[in-house]
Length: 276
Image 1: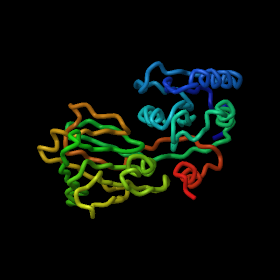
Image 2: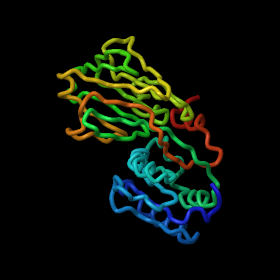
Image 3: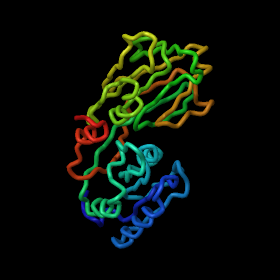
């Protein structure tokens, strides 16, 4: 990543509900100041438009959910993000909070690597558009009733699902809701996305993995549309955007994430999923 001089301004985005966060912010500000780096603390979360403009990096204090809240701005301004984990599992927040100051110094020295994660782009019938680092989820709001969803790709009918919902996931999001719904783990370097039905009525309905260049259309019958929720990276679309059909594809844009040198995705899986 080059040397210290390449990072002159760093944003610190924090989930202040997590314990110990104010002390961590103070520690990062102290380390940055000592290195001659300006710090910026955005005043709202999720970030306002333009919040990361002019920043060379962004530190996120919290869990994976906090990091998901900076995706749209980090992508728009191509600001590399590193997460300092104050959450639970931490598949995206790769730095430990105990070494926050040392981690920041390593990043400022360029002693790290940048991984470019692929994103989903979701468009609704009404023209609402959002990017997802993890997933786009269509789910029933009425837990006693199944949905009927039809999926097509490139004008070709794929399948009709009777289910509690559908998860469309990136490789990054494959360790999230997709995993708990029985979907596959996908290496973050794979240029693919997956569709996983939630509690399908037909047991043979399984995950489907599709390549870049494929887009899918998700349609709901009139009844299902009345009790459908659409969430993108955990943020629910408002009623004005909950319109079918949805078109979902891999975006041309990517999300830059800072990782420690020598980061291993397999080690992360072994540690977090407690593999033998």
